[in-house]
Image 1 (cartoon, one colour):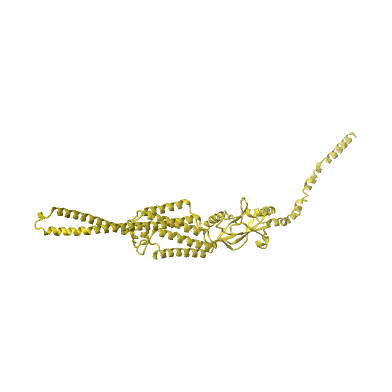
Image 2 (tube, rainbow, N blue to C red; image 1 turned 30 degrees about the vertical axis):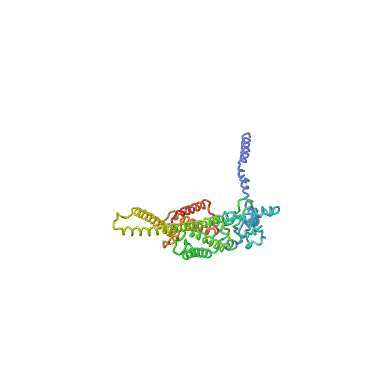
Length: 453
């Protein structure tokens, strides 16, 4: 019985060990598998993100806000004297609006317009309602509209110089100009460079004014030369350099003034430097006439003195010649020359010496009278206007040529400046001094110059 019980015990133990099979390991139920409860709210998240589609609706008004602070209203091609309207947006508009409430006059004066980077002093804007801008459908409407009149005021130095700087950089034809607006001394806000199309006047008008002006200038100069107005005296006399220079600047300034008035529509101010230039040329012309007249008068007076002295000597010669004739006849009547009285022989010698001396003086004065006669007469023409003004009685003259060269150079600069800026130029004082020295030298050399220029 004992061994059975032992078997039985052994059998009992085995079953207990069989339970041990940790077959329960299929605890593959591991919630790890459940973890992929791919209830992934990630799939649902797109549904949550769906409202992001509404976001663009919120951003839409931001897209409509302009990325610029100012914009020029479309107005076609604008000419000098025309009007432009500038719309103001965003923070810049807010700044201006806030300051307008406290100091409107100062703000308007402080809103400075610039064209291609050149600030234009003296252009004060007029405030217009936003509707005046004429924004197209779907475009932002400005908070403020500034209307500027592009006027050039020659009486305001800063405005005139700003326009001179701006226009000198432009060609004649239409071109794009970048507009800027700044408050007080702040850096200006810039518009798109293509928004303003600007020109001074139609290209055909400008060309016509320049061509007609040059034709009138050269035509009047030729007319003055042909009519003898630039001669020293009568039609056979030479042309005067002083009168020619005076006519040159007189016609040039007159027709330039007329051309600027036609193009700009305003009476142009004549700078003091131009008036000084006219004064220098006028003084030179007057000085040349006075010197020539003075020399002519002096020569005429001296000629009269010499003629009077010759007349006196000729009166003295007449009795001496009669006496000599009588003495010669008396001497011939004597048969023997030794018998002729000694006192008569001595008297004959004295008479002959006196006659010879007086005749020599008369001959010398006669030559001097010829010289003074030439001096009293105006210089004779060489047959060429240009050769007349650059020559004296000795031929081509450098000091005359110098005056001609500087006159032509300054005249070219004068015309070129007007064509570029449509305003009378202001010459540097050093150039005016140079012109004065050159003309003064001409007058100085003209004083001893023989009549012939």
